[in-house]
Length: 214
Image (cartoon, rainbow, N blue to C red):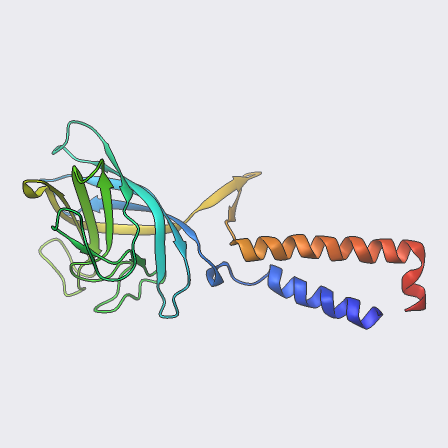
């Protein structure tokens, strides 16, 4: 009995301390234009499920707020969820809603799929679409390394925003007592609860003297 209790404790502890990367994660991101004349920027959040086994996670929900002189004020668009190589409702963009948290997407690396895919967001019902994807790291007129394309589209076609810039991804976190605590997935949280229950059982068993006869 004593040996079994110790094994149970070890298993639950291992589950509780497993890396958060083993389950879906939440991220915040920012986009900053590298084209001075545009001056566009954006920020938002992404919720994922996964992993998919190839370094990618599927983005299941999220939103982006775009700050651009092309619109009268900030505009917030919601993620259009999907899986596979998809075409937007207006037929302007292709997307796959994949995120590579380690920046190792195929075709050149980056947080998003390279060239013509990436994430799709929508404002209203096909009123405005926004596609953001990773460019190949071959260097561009706006600087070396990975850049990211961010384009919008309306019923009339592409535009008014056609931009290139940087994309910064950070794990979502909550501030507790001044310390940043990463958000762990549901499996780890269940394991933590299990550890607490096992600990309570062991404490009660010792208190009642059961473990002395184990």
